[in-house]
Image 1: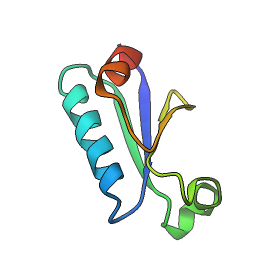
Image 2: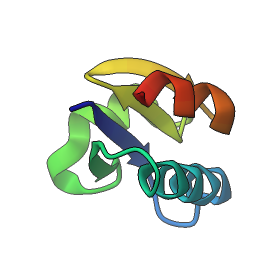
Image 3: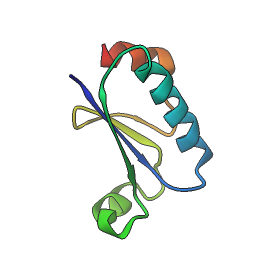
Length: 79
């Protein structure tokens, strides 16, 4: 089963849009999902890497998208 990770932060409208797409696709195609808030003190590594880049989406540990998530391409990638 695929694993999708969303790197996000509070108040990010692009992150909210990506999360909606991920949940919509997940309703049709099961995959593991993890959401990481880069502003959490435990996630300092991700803050350094993605501070001005969120949302960032990984599939199986590899970066798939930044800023905007294309639903069709995402759907195909998690199948």
